[in-house]
Amino acid sequence: MGSNPLPVPVTPAGRDGLAALLDAPERAVAALDFDGTLADIVPDPEQARAHPGAVPALARLAPRLLSAAVITGRPAGVAVRYGGFAGVPGLERLTVLGHYGAERWDAATGTVQAPAPHPGVAAVEAELPGVLDASGAWQGTWIERKGRAIAVHTRRAADPQAAFELLRGPLHELAERHGLIVEPGRLVLELRPPGMDKGVALAEYVRGSGASTVLYAGDDLGDLAAFAAVEKLRAEGLRGVLVCSGSAEVTELTDRADLVADGPGGVVELLEAIADRLPDRRLPDA
Image 1 (tube, rainbow, N blue to C red):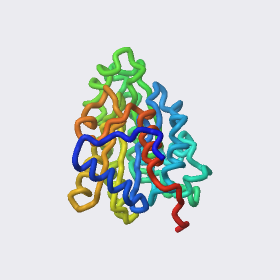
Image 2: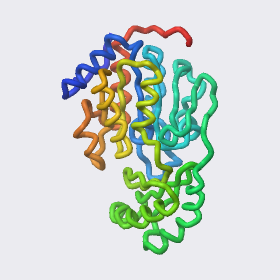
Image 3: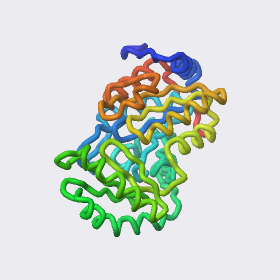
Image 4: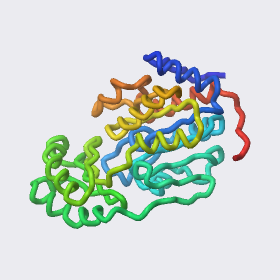
């Protein structure tokens, strides 16, 4: 058992967390971001798909744990579709928390639970083309309509980082006028309702599950809130492992991570390595 090498966390808290997960997997939760963690970042977000090894790795690992979750800024249904998570043996207990936890899809029911959309999103969508035009940042930018949020991508602009910085101020002003906030990411600015982030979603999920250990993997600025949530849960007595899906574009997570994986491929290898070291058993159905 253990054909894939298992990396050693660089921090004492991370080593303690990984040891706890391996010792009592039936009390552990694995939660992962989607884009940049389970799926490679691509110029067109609509073309994003889970890494070829992601679903098989999750399907091996999830039955050995208390539960597994994907936490994403995407709509839950879109993440399920792009991830290919529905109807996969081994993922019967998977939960996808979309729109930073505002939406929830459970594999057991195959349904999405969601509140009514914030009215500010529609108002922002109507004004956004004019704001982009007035800012001189229209060419090369791309608007992604998420239903409960709207995002502006600059990855395809002639100078992606310059376009990103140029739009920060105007988009913050636009969001504030309509009761929204701006979540920056890897060459993307997302305008969404306040009150939910990956940290809130992760903490609620872990506490609701009754887990004593949590592993979280992410790659972007939006995952810092989830990292902070794990650090707070550690302070409350839970064990935790923080994994960064490494990127040269975002270094903040690397500095705070217990483990750094080499992108989605490295995350898949980590999940496989953990599964290699756990008993091949499935928990009884809830």
